[in-house]
Length: 295
Image (cartoon, rainbow, N blue to C red; front, side):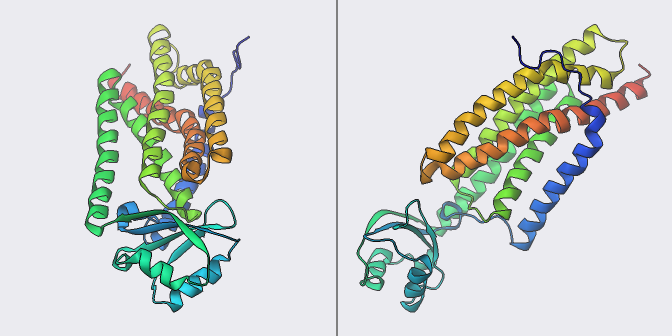
């Protein structure tokens, strides 16, 4: 038995409502990014030192922050990591000199072990930031060229708009929740781009097939029918992927937790955008082109 085999939902009839929803979500994220001066970047991009400390007993974050400030650490960023007795301490690049020794000296009243210590120089951080931006740009450019060749430029514009929509919303949610962007999260963004593109191409393939066999049908109706025909596959793929990334988020541990969270957001938004962003935009552009050509 096929899931959602004979649906007849008017997806494109709700495109204006979906457009308002997407615009509102993107706007909230952009406002948050502007107010905060951009995304909260991890030390991978800004440079600095990260230390993971495991205390012998549960310890208060505010207490540790106060001790570090009193001992000359100017901008410590501290957050709990998993259990009540583990913390991540991040310091900017200018504070990394003899960081381990200074940390042990400042926290002499506490029994702890340093489980992880990572240092990234500011020049390396800037280089990684530049490469990250270029990697996203080249990915979108390659996708634009690929879909233009496989379909046409209107399909390509619809797909790239959906991908930009997915990344902007995910980035905005990270900004609203004050979550850091590091190399793992960047990998999640690129994975989201690939996932969303795959879903979009499946829908586009069905639209192209139906457009060839149903030339007399109104194009919006053809697009709507195609989305309904691929809906079962879309829902099953999304649900199975969500099950995996949700499991990773819940029991995968702190190291992979925020990667999994980005993927959860991306899968939901990517499924939505294939239906309510890529397809409606492509249909509008194709319809106008057909009207201009007199077809």
